[in-house]
Length: 452
Image 1 (tube, one colour):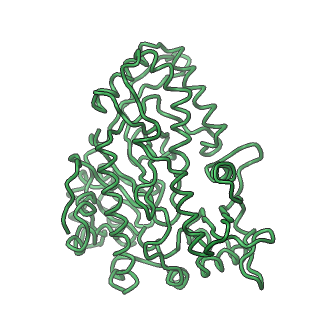
Image 2 (cartoon, helix red, strand yellow):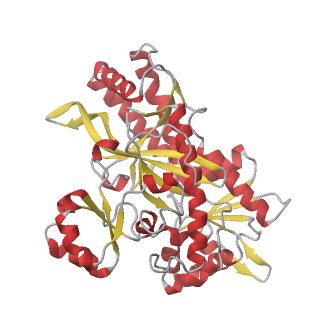
Image 3 (cartoon, helix red, strand yellow):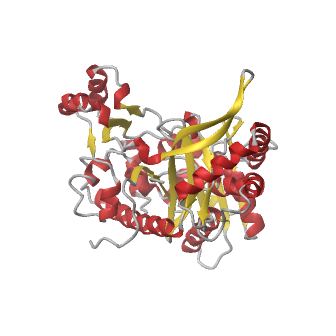
């Protein structure tokens, strides 16, 4: 395959893919709205207009692209019919609160004038007339759950399982096997000549950890990370330098449930954020070096959105004490690194009181919009993540390559060519086989580490 000419920078890398039920597709615009309306105006004034940002043209509006994806799926299911979009979730947000699902339903009803509802799993019913929700037939169901969590709920999800068999559910469950992280070992190994060069180059060298690898993994542990093959949200992630002894590696290897992946140099994804310290004896502004990543939201039409996250250390996710950054287009003469330094200097110039007030306003807005994790507002970085038009173009090419490769990998799995790599529990296999994806409407999240 011919590699495209594009401005890829050294050190870009995938950290993982989420093909089952990726989240964060509304977060990026909610964070960007808060940044545009609350955080940026006083910083812009402090900078005296030295930096100009784009909030809509260079960056992508993820809810628009997700809506288009669902409308296309609806049209595939029931040509010519008005969409009735159902978002199915395990539980609804408390009264008076929002989450990304409820915000998206609100957006669909208001901006696209279609019927959309947020419902719990058990409200999807199988009847003699087919799949029914509150007496009406949905044209597409967006499912906020992976299959293993869904099946654990038993009879209450029989209606949803039937909807999966009927092809009403996005994402199709046929995508789920591609979320097995052991697949990375094939991408960088036996399949490297069958896939797009950027997909292979972006994927760190990976091994499915076996007992034969224990000595090698122990000797090279400081340059490795260990991840559960079916993990998510950073659960089970272990940096090799934190492994206590060789027996700990052996325990991971015996289960067959871990991969060993070459560590991406953490300096590649470092970023500097100014944050207010509020301890009674330490009230000051502090420049924190954090780890960051991009979550690229990819649909059948290409790169559909982005969400930038930060954490004190890897893995990067809100569960590790992190938050979100607004991705903004940089249209000034400065580089992203120069712009970062200028914004941080402006924040220090504003002083502790002004910055603390700005941070509190942003947190209040985050809570009101539904940017909530475990009953607290999702922290928003006061310095945004800058991206240039060329960088966004490059990410768009890479996203298309990954999508094409996932289509290839799904076909390989269905042909049995990945059985030695990908594990699918027996209670899921029939459902997955009955719900092929084949490159149709869906949303894939690819978490990417990108050098500034």
